[in-house]
Image (cartoon, rainbow, N blue to C red; front, side):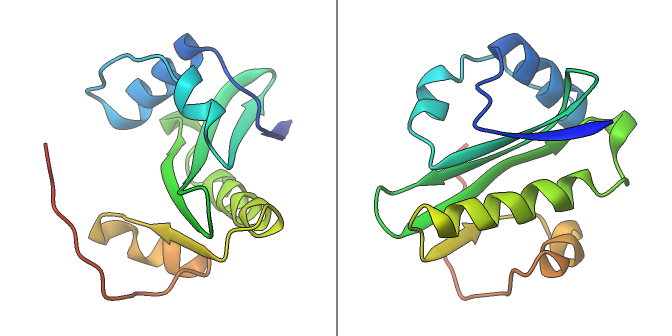
Length: 128
């Protein structure tokens, strides 16, 4: 059974394994400092195994940023990402954010539109 956990602080090994499976090439890192400054983060667990994750970073004020939305390939197309994004949106609102931003690649437009995001004029510089 799938369980969504709010602010679960998964081990770096769990997050790195999920991100590696979801995104392919991945550089392992420690997330403790990142997650401790996040407005919220959601972990999706199936039988105590991390199968999905989303982080809500923020500027300390009214702007929050949805990042790292990931679902293990074996668990995709089951509505997990949608549930996580909706819960993250709710938590961001409850915790004082007035704006929730997300950057994504064009093939994810339908997904984020279905989650309630709408296009805005924004600038982007790819630094890496």
